[in-house]
Image 1 (cartoon, one colour):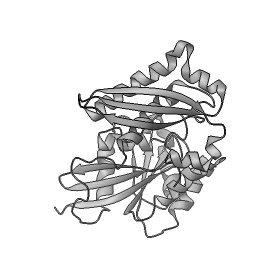
Image 2: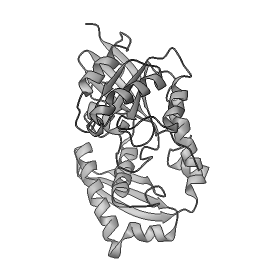
Image 3: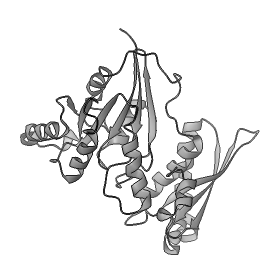
Image 4: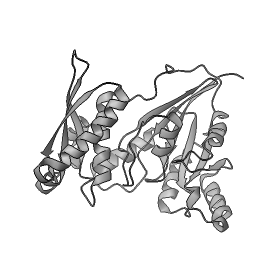
Length: 296
């Protein structure tokens, strides 16, 4: 069988399992995941290479109604991810009926009517048997496709069948990326994301969304130790106090957990140094958004 290669944009609203699905397929943590909406803030590529195909998945921020400059940038990145691709994979929460946000995603999908669209109804383990047919028919009608698969991304259920559908839409081409490459993101960006993931998982209310992380310096030393210094950016002094915790306990906890993830990814020892700085209104500040690589 001829080798196939192509780019697949993965779109949908927040918290439907896009990043979880891509991480499972790629076999590496390409995108951080949490239960918080809008965890993914920028376009991320995850590359799956097999003997007969290579797929470059474009993980995108969830489509939502933006309320600040950061969120507008996130939605624009999702829209821009549809340029130069070979197939669109729409991920939805199959346990519920389509809503207004799904309709916004569908309007985006329908801009290019020739682009093949595959539907992934995720979280099928939460679907009631009597609702399956109704939900499948509603989503297929909304996105104008008859190609779909019910999945549980976190466990990989039916993901192999979903991949078979996607591969059939890819052109017959040689692989574009090296066999051992699984993302286009830099180690600095991934390190910052690992820190942010721990914050997302461990904080509540507004704090997760008011937080960003930037790697200030990275030094690979002769003894094999990577010395990484990163800053956690927050909106308010009160959030800084939360990030630090009593006697610095919270920042130490997230630093330890992020360091372990980073060491696993790099295959080397890491010294991770974290600081917290207050930047009021950073989500509306183009200079800071550019510094964080959220805005070009």
